[in-house]
Image (cartoon, rainbow, N blue to C red):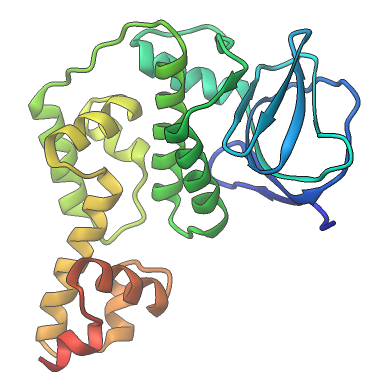
Length: 266
């Protein structure tokens, strides 16, 4: 049995706990944070809102702040899982953007258990980004997208999906003029006149990719230009704001289907 690992983000108020092949059991308890977890393997006995159920690989648990709950491996077994603990105040801000009106406090989720492959996959992706990404904008963008999607899917709120095209164009212009810089979703949203939530959804609807993906695409296009001019790969990676050459190499190959060296030679 391995020990649990913890990761705390500096970008968003989220803590990630990951446990593998755990036999550890909890008594019924509560905590102030909102939490959502995914069962990576095994079976677990889940208690929430005075209801017990058996959950399995692929299951999602949703725990509102202060709800009495427990989640333990089935008798004589172990299980692996990931759990995100989220500040309710930050999540309330996301909820406000989804419904298009200011919410004074966090709105509890209407369900406490899901069997939803899409959300399970998205949670795995978000956990991976939280622990491995060095790009603040990518982390911020994916957290907003995940939790706004979760709220929209699990609560009966109507919200305006339409945003003026001019606002989206302004978002594009801001990224175009600042793609080398360490910009944030909040920066782009403020400039464009959209909320962070509407920015991400309207931008994807218009361009087919997220603001962060557009920034990376612009960086790679500039990298191609500089490579053709004979600039050094290391200096290009630094100039364009990549964390290191490995980060630059990975993104370049993903979009060009060739390494920077291969592209430069040809």
